[in-house]
Length: 346
Image (cartoon, rainbow, N blue to C red):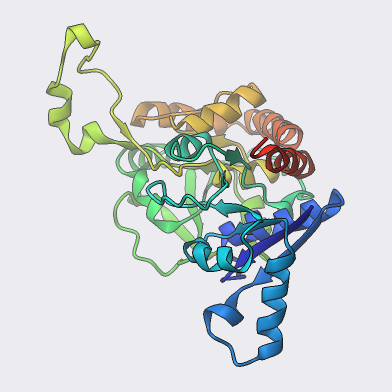
């Protein structure tokens, strides 16, 4: 099976490229599949370099399977003109994007899987960072200093508001807390959700330095969920006994692309994570057997207090690392992807 990944933005600092194109192609090669990445920019830019242009055309024409990355799935119709018979896959598309030329979709969570119900063939391939698969697991030592790590796209930091923010402020009365952020834009002005009176240490995401920064931390927080009853308290007034609606219900909002990728990197480094109430969090905790989660201020305080104990951190970090290594082996998922593609249309 000749598999060609099509990209218009081969940037290693972009997770959708690094994980689902660069690393997945490498993994397929390691299980003896003919896989290669094709940069389609000579066609997108109408390059005058005829040789480069022809090489791209030839790679597309000869493929059995074409998988278009996030940066270029919207040019699928042009790719289809070059190769009408290949099985076509796309990565990380918008849930409202509809194209009958798409044979299968690759997603990073069960939430996203559900959101793409228009498509019959949806494959869950977790966002496994192969760059960190041999990372040293941190040995946590007793300390009154706690470094809390956030790793991911900077807008999600607003989800610290209000509960994580307030919990960190409370915990800082007993521990010296530093909030460490690793984002693609460390120069952003963090206003919504930024804890008061706590040192914030911002770092730019760099594949060469991220391991050292994460390993310097003690606890990871990965917020996906917004508590809508905080922003719209009138929602609590919508009660209906016959429907089972009560004024104590959780009222949550989270992206349909919510996934565990930001937490996986912390597992790989031996950093315990306080999970939120998003479905992918419980999918992983069921595998590890360690349920470390929170939603409101008091439950975050409880989780932070529990993880202030270095022995708890080591136990949970070890369970998470073992569960990750067992359940998120890239070669096993690549084999499943191959079988999934082979069965399309049968």
